Length: 230
Image (cartoon, rainbow, N blue to C red; front, side, top):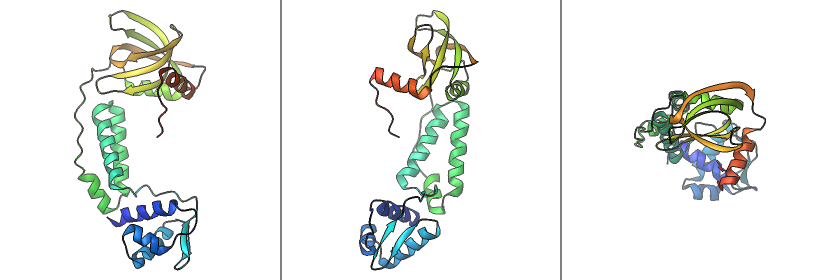
């Protein structure tokens, strides 16, 4: 276990105790000596963690300390790399750029051992094979964020074309297709639109008269989909 990972594990142990816990127990749980434990506690205190206590009395972490972003476990590093690589390969160009930029910012503040783990993670993501979209999905996401109505020119599975005004509130990135979920003013119901079948899209100046979180909640309830806990 690297020192960064050990410090993270120590914080997690302290967070699990509301009352002071003996240094000997912490050292045993981490598999380190008491001397190393005292040094690690001093390091965390220097980084801003409010750890109170002293040898013989035990230690407790007071609420309010935010975990520095440079402290990750190996699994968290792998999750970050896998997630950003998936976005870079499977999402649109703007999201791909955002993923690469985010990972570079994380890498810039990682200590040497975790930076090496990030650079050498052997988790691969295949390229995307979904049909090309005629619209810029970054504009779709912008409409969702700003809760703006959009006018869609859409072609359905039978080839019939229609123009309709919708309230976009979610965009699904599936393996082989991207799907816009929206409230359709024409049908007065929720509808799903494949991005590759949207011929054209115009974002309107008018905001739709509902919050996207409320639309998403109602859509999930109607479809029996559990809310994302993350």
